[in-house]
Image: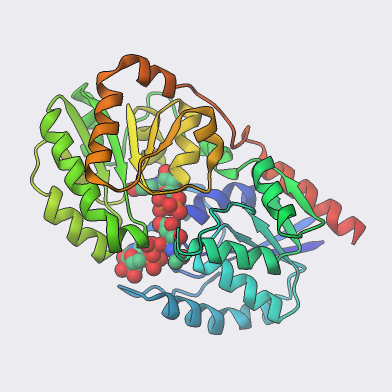
Length: 371
Ligand code: UD1
Ligand code: UDP
């Protein structure tokens, strides 16, 4: 039996790893062990509960206003004993968080092979997104197995000199919809039932990136404020990340506006069902850029670049930056021009068909056989 230890730290890692863990649990050739670093607390637990994922370890490292150094050193120190205790045949990490990179580094120190899920995304700007671009680049250097969601991701890895064990699998985030998305869904957050009953179109907003907190979030909020005043017939729903630095800015500029609903983070079931019923998404999140195209919801990316060019090429995602006027103009263009909206609102699936987890499990088992 192959012992696979999956390490998860934050909300998006959990959303994208839980379907894979479920798939491994079904397979009699695999023993699945799960370690949470607890880089996130409430937002991580929300996801684990919904997917009913079995957890074996929780390092519980989260501290308010944690620095990158704090996250890195706490995980590095605490995870070593888990690896020594479990002696897994393979450690799986996901994406580009500090949990992913540090869990991979600690596994490398124990000479345990590493599988990287969602490998090969790049902007080639090491400060944007920060620190994610460096986290994922370094993780690629350490990993043995690279599960690339798209061909473009695979090509990035080849360009960097990785010669073998790259598998194109699709993104497991699409797999998650089979657990979360439901017809006639009743939201657990009752505010969302009220907002949707209103029958006004919903603009869904999320913004939390470290580089935006430092520079762009104030502009993003000012743009949303202007748009919300210009369009009282729309509802703006913004589940706000609990990071105090994000909250302070968002509350200062967007608090108290009648058609802007600032909510606590909503759980992933509420989120995916809200997304599928939204008219437009404004976000700096990575995951939402992959999810919204599946439902044909246009996305304006509140960043200067993206590591997810596939949906941009397909025309459903547009990078608009963090300049206030630019955001306002791009949103107005979409709201005023029905042709423009129609062009962006095609349902496309560049990120997968919902079977990425199955493919990853198959590749892991083949790798083991040939090893
Ligand atoms: C982290 C990831 C980022 C990912 C994001 C997803 C790193 C460096 N960053 O950023 O790549 O896009 O998660 O959301 O790995 N907090 C809570 N409760 C929670 C979670 C966070 O209170 O459940 C607060 C804490 O005060 C914490 C702060 O948010 O210190 C920031 O959390 P952190 O994980 O350091 O950064 P994120 O911005 O969430
Ligand atoms: N999400 C959620 N509740 C929220 C906001 C986001 O469940 O209140 C989901 C969203 O649908 C996506 C994921 O969290 O699946 C994205 O995570 P986040 O924006 O935190 O991180 P990123 O994708 O930017 O790394």
